[in-house]
Length: 94
Image (cartoon, rainbow, N blue to C red; front, top):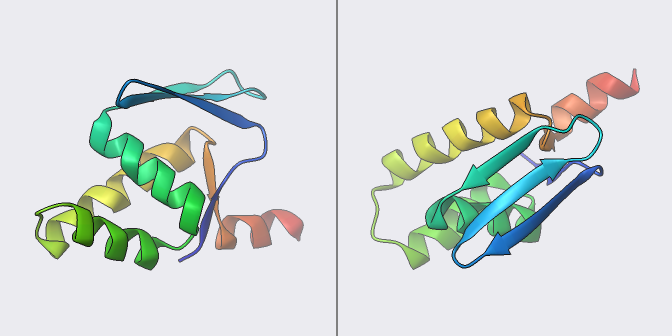
């Protein structure tokens, strides 16, 4: 799955944490250090599989757990309008 940060979203890294704000909706979200790194990898790669690959190289974590945690994070970010999947963009274009 491909995912991208929504156009109206800004973020700032503060120490090892991040604050994300959707300017259009005023929705904001805070991330801990691991969530911040996942956010950075999403911004860099745009591919869930590449985020998983990079994360497995950086962290000592079981792939199954990482996939579940990343899926949960992406769902939360999507609900707040902070990221979009290619499927969402296609349905909005119709």
